Amino acid sequence: MVIKASLRSNFSAVRINMLPSDSDQASISKLIKTLKLDAAVEDIRVLPVSDGTHCVADVRVEDPTFAKRLCEVDIVNATVPMGSNYQRVECKKVHCSRHRPLETVWLNFRSKKKAASG
Image (cartoon, rainbow, N blue to C red; front, side):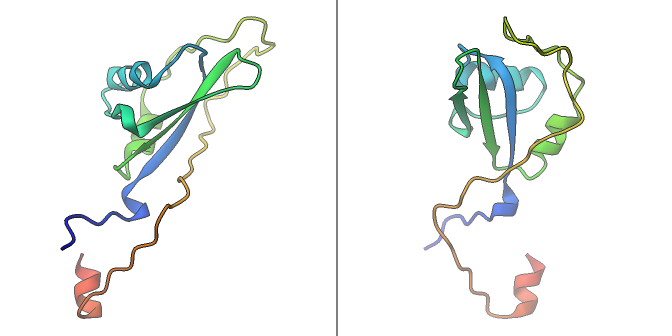
């Protein structure tokens, strides 16, 4: 018995750059909540940057509109790591990606019409 089937198109993901180096899943989830969006702690992966000055977070949510809605919120002032040469923040580009699938799932429908109706 199949309880739930999820497709790649059910998800969206964003990468948040230039986060303070002490950021963790809980603090990033809280930050996202202040933007009136939701991301559970288990949806967030924090990755340190090799120079240790900051970190990045990959947020993958089962909501195909999450990335778009996050990009539509008002600009938030971000802190720049000490010692960096950054003079500006580029807010016009968003890198969206999907995590590599762990398993392939095939769904078989009785008819093409049934499959198309969702």
